[in-house]
Figure (tube, rainbow, N blue to C red):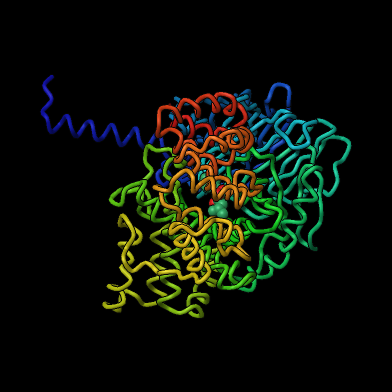
Length: 616
Ligand code: BES
Ligand code: ZN
């Protein structure tokens, strides 16, 4: 049979769209779930943590909400072993198939149901290399005696430890029964976290507010609790609890400050969990229980903006959730904006403007790295056939921040706050697309009716255009101007030890270091180290910035401490720039590969997937 070219293309396109349909949910390219037909109202997991085999095993009961008549339920799974699936209270066995593996998405689990099926129960276990899970040996904890387990579900890793509809557009309540070794304690992103380890290794949790799967979270370890206020406290390993309680002492005030800006905190409690140093992120906004890296424990409370950030997600993200990962800026841009507002209210405008200047600096650097013409510099992303993790850059955070700040500066803070408060309230516990948000913004402020306003704001350039529009707000910090003056003085020959650095905080130093030119001579770098002892700093952010200069200048004294740093810390944002800098020279790359060979087994998958790409 002869097929004409036109026909051939038609068939090809048709086939492709069928393949797409089978592979993806219509709205969310990162989920296989058939959400148009059925969705999940409640999840009930009962799982046992086996630290010897590094396997979670047990069952997940899914409570269905039928939208259309269907005989199948499609769920997301990745690296899960499915043993058996049953229906309803009688536990009637049913058939299921695991589809073909798709890179980073895993396999669709298709289960035969009837239009009347109320519950589906899946007996399953995880694999030892499940991407969401990190099983730590005692040597990787700060106590060094007991093992530790934690999960990281965002963006699409929940499916590696729970079979579910793993897209941010599906919300469910959940309950959990967790069986742990008797000497360990379990905590989750739910109600039920207790203040002292029990002795039976049995922990029960209940999350009554509906949440998307990426906020499912569990940690198991040798944990202690310290209350910080009547609705807040901190969990950490015993050796870290004192330091943690000191660092987060302001948390109750922070919750109140946030409530004063955008309305009541809707999750009852706000606790923090300080993880071992391999935690791949600074923080993760797991509801009721923020997960945090120990690298923010600077000892002087100077890095608590991170707590403001994760707390802010209790509104932006956890209450009003990005509908898909293409709308990621709705989570992160709003959160950075709210974070800065909380910081301003807590510590004053001088402080928050320092943060904003650093935010702009990072944004410009990121745009330079990605390329100002790249689609990845748009707020609205297109992640089809891509791992969301690859495109989750500073753009969503920092370009998103400046876009919202532009709205504030245009409409005035009072009017802008009225809008945002209403936005959080009216859309609480729902999902939001970029388009629906823009529609609300346009309607509320009557933007489209005003041609000159539309023109000056240029919203489409911000959201759908690449690069940074030239109406980007300009943060201004007198503090940083003083720092810049000291940088100039130093470059003009003033001795490091006589620079005027009195009263400088972490952010002054970060600005100072990031403004040193690449052409700085090694002697000058050594002079700085003698004067300020950067190489021995206990501040992980300062160290990351400092080590970048040391690599550039090949300052050998720093390489020993830097090796320790890379061996101990798994927070991607801190170590990624070091590996990038090292990889720029053959000698640096060889050194990095040698360190990495030893460090990699201690990193979480999120981190080693990125570093693998840099050192390949
Ligand atoms: N939700 C993010 C972490 C995240 C993003 C995990 C994308 C997985 C995929 C969290 O709120 C975050 O933004 N953390 C930042 C903190 C910072 C901006 C203050 C981090 O980890 O560096
Ligand atoms: Zn965030």
